[in-house]
Amino acid sequence: MVRPRWLLTPRVAVGRGWRIWDRAVAIWAGVNLVWVAFDLTYVPLRTFWLQRNLHPLPSLPLVIPLTALPDFTRVYDPVKGIEHHRETRDWLAGFERMDRALDGEASGKAAGGRGKPGDQAANTALRRQQVALTVLMIEENPFLDSGNAGTLEKIKNRLRQRAGDESAKQATALLLSDRWLASHPWSEEERFWRQQILPLVETGYWRSIDENGRPTDHFWRFDLLLFQSVFALDILLRVVRLRRRFPGLSWRDALLRRWIDLPLLLPFWRWLRLVPVLERLSTAGLINIEPLRAVISRAVVSLLALELFEVLALQLVDGTQSLIRSPQWPRWIRSLRSHQNVSTRDERELVELLRLWGPMVLGQVAPRLSPELQAVLGHALQQSMRDVPGGGLLPPALSRQLAGGVVESLLELSRSTADRLGQRDNRQVELLQRFGDRFWDELAAALERGGALERSQQLLCTLLQELKLTYLAQVNRAGIDALMDELDELTTPAGADSPSAENSAKGS
Image 1 (spheres, rainbow, N blue to C red):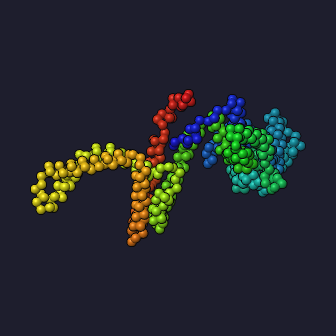
Image 2 (cartoon, helix red, strand yellow; image 1 turned 180 degrees about the vertical axis):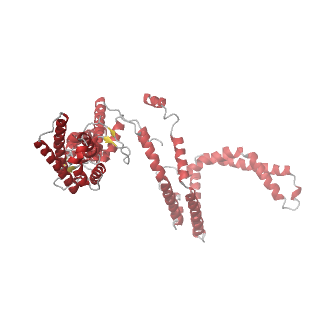
Image 3 (cartoon, helix red, strand yellow; image 1 turned 120 degrees about the horizontal axis):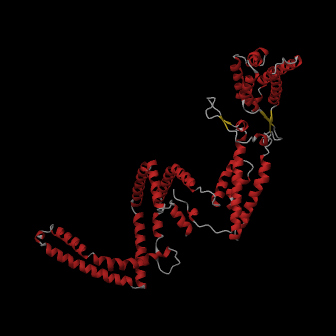
């Protein structure tokens, strides 16, 4: 797609300080855009940022750990008003207490001891407490608050599969019972709980509500302090620079010229900042969005061109038909008379055109056509004499001689007329104007008499109607694509995309 004219126009040179400032603000705006994208996607992707695991195929247990990524949840949860849910927090705390107790018991057995009866009773109480917390979690489903209702079903399914029981509550009681742990060492069971259950329980959270009844979000505070204040200052400086270049420009008009920066100051629809950020990065010379603009422009034009062409063609033809059907033709024709034309020029355009073209056609063009005129006139005389009795005996040479004499007489008359027209003569100008006025009057009167005007209008409108139907039938998507290709060939200079051409352009 061809580059727009405003991109081809050389920009006004600015000082080095302004260039550094513009680039710094453009980079800062890019950072803000990345943060806006992170903020808009943080809540839906919080599970990913918490676990930092990638599941390329959700239907398969394939996990790609991304431990190199930092844990943003500890820092960013307070910004979004996210806290651990009370039930999941209690469950996680209870599991850690039970895990420490069972690890201590397992270590004592490994050392050859049997453990104290009091410790075994405490461990049994912790396991029963954990079973109760799991049953409470299953009944209350704290994951509904975070919009992850399916998480509880995953936990229940994994507990059922581990214990081989159809009830998740009974499966939990079985997995933490003395009978199960007697045949399954806690080291293996701990691996199951930490890899299969704990990551799912940790995803449960609770988000506070502000005074307006909406989820808490403190993003605007940091955005206003760190970014929007800088953007407001930059917009003000750009307006000042614009008014210095155009002193007659009002403050309002200068601000309106920077309308593209408006999304940078809006506290809502923050994804619209993509447009001003790209514009600033492109203006600062940090990125080149011309290929992307060309692709988008071509796609939009291709989609709309067919409809636009049809509408414009119909509007043009319909407007022409309306003018043709108008009964004001005689009045329009009479308005062409010289005494009804308002002109500030001393000489009439039509008269000057006749004075310019008359000598040229009669004095220069016509004499060069003498052989052709003699041949045409001689042939016409030869054909005409055949209809006269005895005219067929007229030799062709005589016809050519007569035609030559007539043509020479006409050319001599045209030369003298050309010389006469080439001379400035007020009487001649007056006669030409009188001839033109009489011509327009007679033409208007002839149209008013009889049905010539109505018949002419009907024939012309019918012709335009047929043209309209034929044009719309020929316009199609393939034709539009061919026009776009032709436009690229006509408007794209040769070698414009080559690096050498760009370097030569910059050098010039």
